[in-house]
Image (cartoon, rainbow, N blue to C red; front, side, top):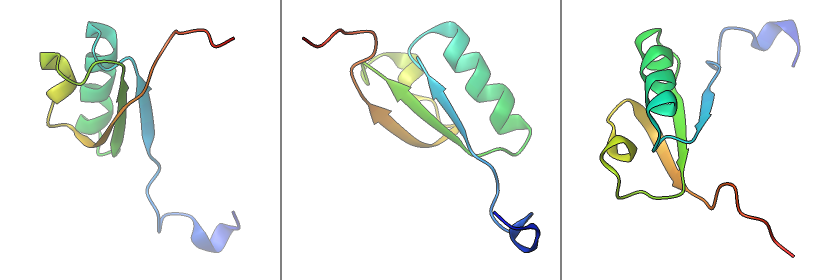
Length: 67
């Protein structure tokens, strides 16, 4: 990224574990500071996974091992 692009495209935060209280609080803090938040959760049906502070939410397996 060169210096002419700075300030034109806002930084984004990706919060992994949106279904946990720590992830939800992190998303809320970032959003309150004007940072767009993308939330990642293994279970999109939990209440904290349905927060309105995220501009986008992804449901991905977290913490699973693949062989």
